[in-house]
Length: 393
Image (tube, rainbow, N blue to C red; front, side):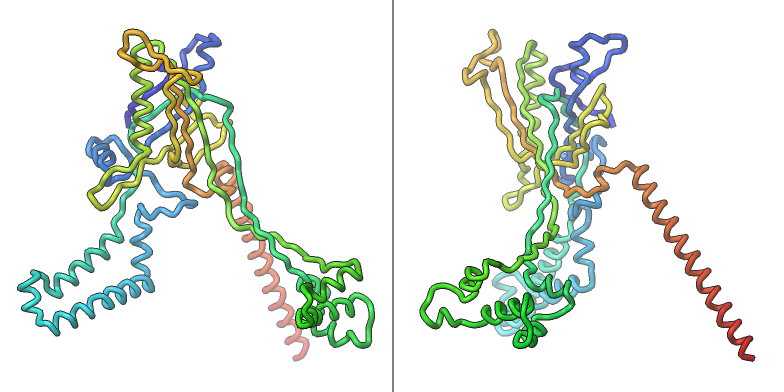
């Protein structure tokens, strides 16, 4: 698929054999943005008609409803039954109304029959399963790397207090056991029992005091219950990436390229108007770091992203200056982009195909060894039973 490349500077990322000048070497590094649009959008439909786009396959870490996921869910037996039930629940009262008023009279006035209503409900159900696949267009934006690439990860863990339950579980007893033994024993078990009983009473509150009985016990003993905290993993955060690019065009070609790039980001950040009622999702961006027009394997891989914030500053250092004989074109423009990944990452994202293949091979070998061992044990057990039977005879 031949690409339309919009670049700034114009030669960014291009390699020239035999030229090792420092100025050129700085341009070998680039960041590339490929545009992914929706199949049913105007831009997606046009690219599909020209043959300048390709379907983007779904990822295991991203729920792809636009690729038919909604249809698969709605085709599931329980959900399909629920949809049918809802449809019937809507249609039946309408059918009763039509019957009571006289379907013919209503149809004559409104031009609507119960069959029309049923057909409308059927179309609603069909609309819920419409797919609007993502397609990678042949448009590519290639820019210089503005600052050292940075990646940040965030994991969400929650805390819970297991309290005495964890201690009892480790000890192998229960709070009932402690209470039962409180009258005849001393030490930690009796202390736990008294604190437990104090917790279920309301003595101090009933007496009009604004503190708990357990508080007095803690002050007197100088001990508090061990919370036995545990951490529960919840999920990973979506990563964000921010880039700030400065355009200082030195020719008409660079000026035109700057504005084409800015407008391309602006246009693809916004939704298309589908009709008066709906908007098409905005485009997404596939971002790769490159060296000499090839992906840089030493930098992080980024999943498909949405452009969530964009700022364009027409000026230099707070002052607005323009280029002579351009009828007012700014001499310097700063464009700041904020992207958010649309995929929750797992460890596989950072593993090479060889690493994954090696792990799977090791697992398969271990399973095979277990099966062989189980077969040998079963054979040995059978032989043992046979020998015992022979000795008995």
